[in-house]
Length: 383
Ligand SMILES: NC(=O)c1ccc[n+]([C@@H]2O[C@H](COP(=O)([O-])OP(=O)(O)OC[C@H]3O[C@@H](n4cnc5c(N)ncnc54)[C@H](O)[C@@H]3O)[C@@H](O)[C@H]2O)c1
Image (cartoon, rainbow, N blue to C red):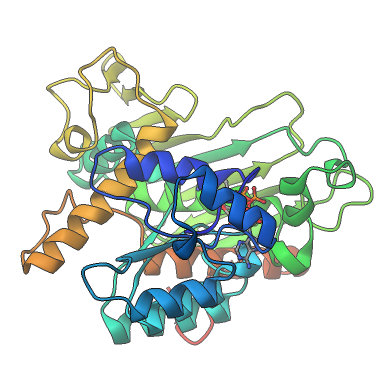
C-alpha cells in the first residue's frame, strides 16, 4: 500500500475491503511521506520493519528484488491525486499490478501515459469507483443492458455533500486541505472529487458514453481555490440527455449520491444512502421495489452479495466487491483461466482515462462561451 497512514481516510477502508474475503493479505507498505507516520503505521498494522518502507520508490525497488513467491503481487495507491501517477507507473514498469484511487491521476496526460503502459505490459489495473461495487447498481446495469426499459432517453445523477460548506481547509482538515489545493487535487475540486464518481455511475449503469456537455462551476465559499459546486448538462452517444450535479456545499447533506435513468418503457432509481433498494418504474404498471439478496436478481447482483436479504450490506462491502473481483481476475490470470464476466466486472484503465477527460472537458466547457463542448480525449478525439 502506498499512502493510507495514520489519520488517513480511505487507506483504512481499502484494508478492510481487501481483507473481507480472505483473498488478499497486506504484506508491505509505504504509508506516508512522513517517516515517523510511515513507521508507526507499519507497526499498527503488525508489519515487520523490513517491509515497512519510507518511500514508494524503496518499496517497489526492494520488493521487486524478492523471490517471486515472497514479493507483493500488486500495489494499492491511496495517496492524494498528485501522488498517484509516479507510484502507479513505477509499479507497472517493475511488473506489479495496480489498484488505484480515483480520479486516476493528476492530469489527462498522465492518465494516457498509464494507459499506454497498461497496454504494453498486460498488467491489471483496478480503479476504485466504489459505487460500481453495489449489487443493486449491478442489477440496474444488467436491466438496462437487457433492454428492460427500451432505449435510454434521460439520466439524472446528483452528488450533493455538505462537508466543505465552511473554509475547512484553513481549520486543519487534511482532507479538505489537499482537495481544495490545485497543486495536489488537479484542475477541478468537487467535480474531480465526486463529479467523476457521478459521471462514472451514469456511464456504467446506462452503458452509454457522454458525448457533449455544458458545465457551470462555482466557488461558493470565499477564499477557496477550486470549484465546490457545479451543474453539467449532458448529451450521450445514443441521443439521451441528462444532468449531473456535484456539490460539497449542500449544507447538511452527507453523501447523497443518487441516480435516475429512464428509457421508453420505464426507469430506475438508486440512492447510495439506501443502497439495498432499487426502485424500478414502469410506464403502465406500479413501481417495483427490488431488494438486495433476493433470488430474483441477476447473476451480477448475486455474485456481489455476501448475506441473505435483510442483512444490510453497504459501503465497505461494495469496496470489498471491487477487491474480490480484482483478486479473482488476477488469480484466473495466474492460473491461465478466463475470468467470468462477473469476476472481471470492475472499473479499470479506460474508466480512469474517461474520468480525467471528464474533468478536462468540464473545465473547458465552464471557461467557454459556446453552449456545447464536445467530449474529447486529447490524442484520441471525440467519442
Ligand atoms: N473511492 C472513494 O470513494 C474515495 C473516497 C475517499 C478518497 N478517495 C481518493 O483516495 C485518495 C486519498 O484520499 P484520502 O481522503 O484518503 O486522503 P488522506 O489525506 O486522508 O490520506 C492520504 C494519505 O497519503 C499519504 N501520502 C501523501 N503523499 C504520499 C507519498 N508520496 N507517499 C506515501 N504516502 C503519501 C498521506 O500521508 C496520507 O496517509 C484520493 O485520491 C481521493 O480522491 C476515494
